[in-house]
Image (cartoon, rainbow, N blue to C red; front, side, top):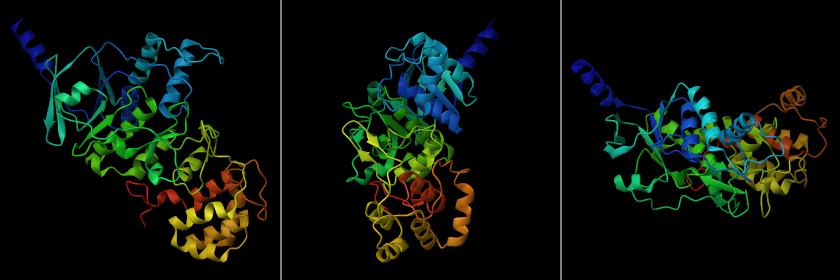
Length: 393
């Protein structure tokens, strides 16, 4: 009996060292934990309850983990196409999430255990649990737990809020999530830098615990710091954005371009730069993929990103952009052979790009076509921006 007692005492006193710890059981917490684990680091979600507490998701631009969850939930609940998820059966949601979590080798979920003491451990964290164990994560994700912030003596000084997409403010270029329904509009974005609290390294603070969209973005941000063993203040915006786009999360809320669209990724990558701007309406933002491109609408944005483009556009007087002139501009700015680029395009047009339109070099180019060509041959996404979204060359 003494041997068994000593054995269990040792188990309870063990120290767990996940790369990322998420504390919470709501929408944002589960999405953060899933993304962190899927991206590839050891992740623990401390529920402090017996299961997840998922709120309904309605009238949003669902993408990424949120869209996947809704599909899994609808399949599990056997909902008909016309039935909306205005009500989430919490037991069914837990079953869906339990199956999903069990399939991820990097994800550990701790249920019915509370944290009883929380403090810093250098740049990292130290949590004593009610079962005697200790958690020492590299990065902490806190989805709006005020009690936890109080224990850690942390006071968020920024609002960490979603903002309506506004092309007059370049902060949209730092977006890591989009499509949340705020005040009856889905045309909203969230900046990477609003996840951070000044002077609090390796803490990702989410003030919207009901948003899976924001939770996924937080998970990728925590993953970056843990995987590269760096501080959150040194987060690489482009790598985090790229990670999220690779996992099908909208960063720009184009309501007319679904993630299933074969050109969705290219449109997101170019869209986040603002080189091709969406059409902002009262309740949404449209990309208008079939709209034809004028020289005036793209001239200044492309010049802002590329020095050589300034020279090319100063000489180009045609008010419309044709496929041919677009290729001439790409060849000039990128030091490419125009002839070889045309030959490549003929091969890629229907196959790689899956365009439904016919290739005619002399006709006016569409916004969809321009986005795909820019992303393939001279991606503006590869040009760095600062924390305010201003171009850094």
